[in-house]
Amino acid sequence: MSQSKSPAPASSTPQPAPFVHPVFEIIQNQAQDDPDLVAKFFDDPQDVISSQVDLEDENGCTALILAAWKGKPRILQFLIDRGIPVNGGNHEHGYTALHFAALSGNPRVCEILVQNGANPEATNSMNTHPVSLALHLRSNPELLESIEKVVDILERMSNREFKDRKDVNEVLSLKFHIIYYVLKDIMKQKKKYDDGPKKNTSFIDLWIKSMLTGRESDGYPVFQEDFLRQGVKEFPYKEAQLFKILVSNFSHCQNYGDSITAAEFINQSFNGQKGFKDKENCDSCGNEDAPKKCAKCKSVQYCDQTCQKLHWFMHKKYCDKLKETHLKQMETISKGAQALQS
Image: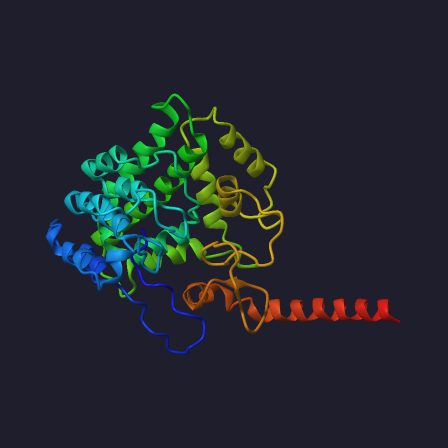
């Protein structure tokens, strides 16, 4: 679950802080797993959560989802008894309480959810782009600190979806594998960073930069491309149809830049390919339908200022050239339109 605040808007206009109900703050910040800490709010008829038990935070998560993520079984059971749906919430990537319970590594929480009707077949549409995953870790430092446990859980979840079920879910198995592969590298590189000399730049920012660094000619992220292709190759279940499709696509696209990136191939295989798109993907994190363009060249897309700043160290080398190309394209379009009108 994303426990971070929403990204800062692209404009510099100050924005009011989102309302956070005290129940969410208690579950988030209090170490005790004590239902009495939150019961008084549900018992107060003047409190919004007493009548709207499935109240959501800014990320579309209910208090029950947060309790699952924080691994608090007693509070979780209390919230279930108060009527909060175990399959509720509207997380932007479709994550449910059971997804977060699995990531928290708490078997008792998972057991309570399943016993109360949590859907074990629910899937999400999480962006598996490595920069997006790294940004999620940056926003949730406690997850980064527990990365060894998370990596182990993801590997077991990937294996379970392919081996330990009567109905094999190869899509979910491969999705878990890709996330596992990315986080395993972050874990490996973090160990090197922690053991080495101290640096002014945070580890996760350096890792993101390595994923965005591109070739000199046009900035294409060759390292990221090779990294993700290798991640797919390391999927242990070579008989999976989705694995074969991805490998075939990669083998037919040896000239990097002539087709969509490996990150786009992978995300489309998990989330489906849209028939029509009116926005491009973010050039930093790969998020679909990035609404912001570089104001100067109008040729690259970003989610917000955070993604734009991350990519600037590369984009600044090519912004002027892209601007020139963009202006020529617009001039050609304008001349074509005038010719049609004459």
